[in-house]
Image 1 (cartoon, chains in turn purple, orange):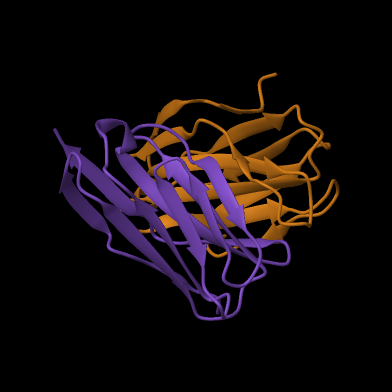
Image 2 (cartoon, chains in turn yellow, purple; image 1 turned 30 degrees about the horizontal axis):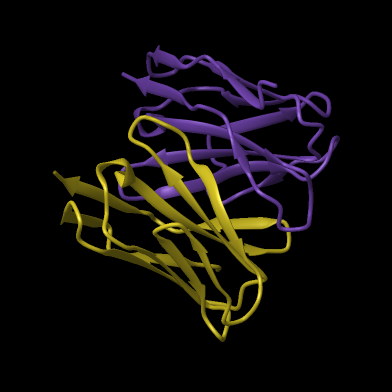
Length: 109
Length: 113
């Protein structure tokens, strides 16, 4: 069946360091989305990538979609304490969303 | 604009009890979903409803039933709660089949003792 793996599961960084989480699908995806969930909160949409090789930026966040549309990454430059939370990728195929297991980011002040 | 509203927010059940989690969205979305979230497991789809009048099983449907009451409401029922169903449950909705954003409710924390 469809699987979306995400690594690492946990990441602790010093404030100001960079952070990257990776998402890999067992099959080709139509689109991929990224969500952020603050501690105790609910997932909130960040961005959607559609095209092969697509790169999008949101301030300090850079999102990439692989050429084969089977992997994606989220990179945060110079982390801040407000970046704390769990980041999920979601691979989309038809009407199904396949969420990765998430990467929990802790930022140490 | 409330978005996706789910109730209750917290619930403690005894093993064998039944309960229904309610979800309503006011965004006129066609598709609605129920997920459970457990530590290290991410978000796992329980059931979804692609449109009013239809429901389909997701990845982990055992022990649950759903009802798409109308376009706005999608409820999740636990007929005989088990400790393995202790989890955080999220209802979500989206416009329809086109890769649009999923909007999540705030979650329901369920503990089965």
